[in-house]
Length: 428
Image (cartoon, rainbow, N blue to C red; front, top):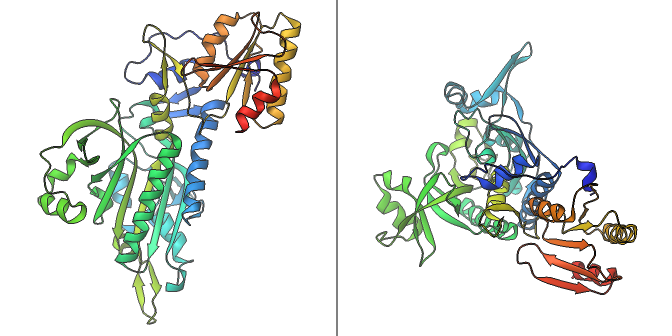
């Protein structure tokens, strides 16, 4: 990518939001654009980071044998009325609806109804089970209290997966696979999440776990045992049977060593049982030729919320400890290196362009800062806000074909004798 084509000017960061500095920087530098409360557009780099997060999700779920589909965001109100949840979502103002001469339609806040409608026509026999369908699609919720920019918006991309099994035993197996997959997904993204005991709440079902990131920006408070790495949502303690529930489902008998910490929820998984199958008549024909209800599980990751958490988690700070940019994990960074050349020196610019083009030819993500009338010092400072892991400066100190590669996070530098050695480094 040529930076001159993005319209990006010299970056001046002022009045950074202390609570959400990462997303504040994204907004100030035009990487996020806000259209209204809880409604955002993504510029090139955050968009590509989001896509890389989605690729990690899809690749991992595919490895676990899940099947990707895509359901419509705009849905007829009839499927919501069939489940009995239409009035609830409309009355509390969560669901956005539109009326037309063809009927009333809803912008989906979640996917249980649409997925059961989808699956019912495909999973008619026990021979079709078990199966887990998933999608990454846009959800819309009329959040009265949008908060934390992408952390709680009105429209957001979400991974939602649903397992269908013949019995409770099978549902628990599918649930365990989903949990393992989620742990693997967040590890690949570069976020150290904690699966914690949670309450199913309005979703219903017997058991659920949230995937929490320890963060001062989080809305949730959990109880956490640092020694065992086990956590639980404080909502659990509101259950009358919480002691029995914790012992039966998780083997937790004593919570005296648990301490309260603040966390951010990035994912949630549920054992739903037959609740939605009963509401929407979701049945298959079992081995005895009898109609039997599906046992379902539900598994979700907030993609935009994960993106926001990632940016808040990989902040760079200057010598005064002020946020000045990002160092995106290599697993999701769309551009691995940024080249800052001395444009007014024709030979330096030609060499920088040669590096840029050869890296592109080798499918190594690269940015060249070819903006005019901006000093190298300002460009180096600006490079931090784009989150590229590495920086190459082609200036007065560059000697011949030597290339110095700087790690934007640690400041460590490596020297390469030529472009081929540099390419080999990125291809290892």
